[in-house]
Each structure stands twice: as structure tokens, then as C-alpha cells.
Amino acid sequence: MFRLPVCPHCGTVYRYKDTKQAIRNKENTCYHCQKRFRAKMFPYILVGAILPLALCIGLNIFLLTRMTDLQLLPLFGVTLGFMLIIYLIIPFFTKFKKIEDGSKEQSNKKKG
Image (cartoon, rainbow, N blue to C red; front, side, top):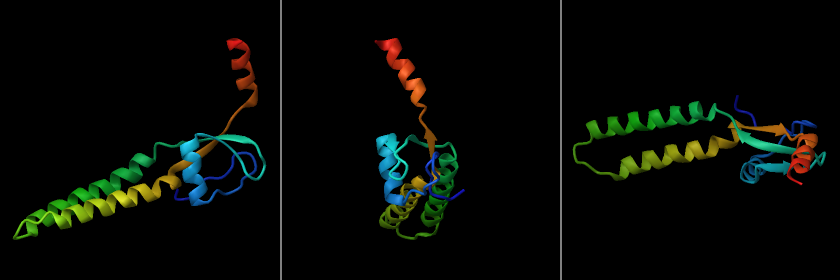
């Protein structure tokens, strides 16, 4: 489940930084085989994001009940820490799909 995505054509594993860039570009070209693919995050990211978010809320509630003098700095620190975790795991929930060249040519014929 926690794997970096691979090119759907040739199976090249994309590094973390390349995956983040592919997510931003949406439609990409493989640097190994030069074929086109689309980067898409799949729905399991909700599970990957909800679990740290639930832990964050639980930890914040625990800190609020245990703190004698109310200081918000620990709460902000915990929340920012968990938000960073969610941001860092996004590339592991990304999938690359092939772009069919024939369907693009057909859509261009319909427009023109």
C-alpha cells in the first residue's frame, strides 16, 4: 500500500520528488520510455489522511484535558505535525494511468 507509483507502460519507479511534480502536472511523459500517462490520487488517501487526523484530534483533546494552564502552543505543534505527515504521504497514494492516444485523436476529430 505504501509504495511509490510506477510508469504504467514500462514499470519505472518514480522517486518522491518526481511523483509530487507529476501530481501537479496531471498529464506527464515517462522519462524512461517517453510514453504518456496521467497522475491521479486514488481514494485510499482519505483513509491515509483520516487516520492521522483522528489521531491529531484525539491527542489534542487529551492535551486539553491534562493541561492545567491552557496554552495553545502544544496544540498548534501537534496539529502542524500531523498536517505535515499527511502532506508527506500523498505521493504514496498516487497512481499513474495510461493515456490512450487513439481516444485523444478521436476527440480532436469531433472538435474540428
